[in-house]
Image 1 (cartoon, rainbow, N blue to C red):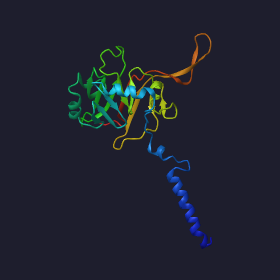
Image 2 (tube, rainbow, N blue to C red):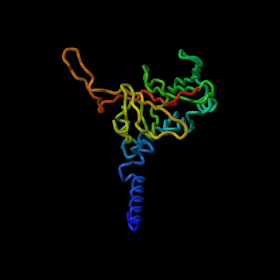
Image 3 (cartoon, rainbow, N blue to C red):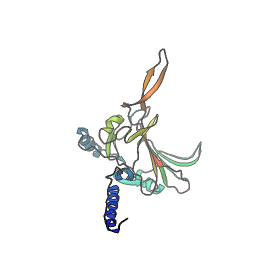
Image 4 (cartoon, helix red, strand yellow):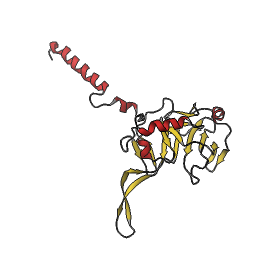
Length: 237
């Protein structure tokens, strides 16, 4: 190698490394950091639902890491005392279950269940069941905010997806009975698992008579979001 060509080659290497770091060579930095759901503020229904949400007496916001009830923020890992201060005394307090000891608070009207680590008494899981056999008879809210996007009870998952940038297969994955957000950006301190309780639909192949087989996933057909679950990925006592 001739020394007079060395500075030029060093400049080329520096340029290539710079392009890689900026994502110009197909390495998307946003994908590396994790996906964050983006609300579709321009959708005609968004402002209407957002305004209706703000007028409710009971307001839930379920974001990636932070949760709010009537503008009071709480997090996975918060103390039992802080949760009681926000929500008050529960309708039911369960300290033992068929699977072992647990500390679970049930707020029937809010359709909210909170579970705490048995030793540290820190919040480890929350779930909201927004639909059951009684429907919404006593539910004191009609809209919650999920990832900053207003979700009206009984709205289908596809209707909700129109209010943000979620897309089947691209950013929204599924199992047979639930959905989840793909490659979602992680919280700083704790690794959380989130489940959207909505049944996935599939095409059916008629084999004649009464025999059918399940075909491919049908992205055009979705049911309502019946529940939301957020909890620690790794179980903590």
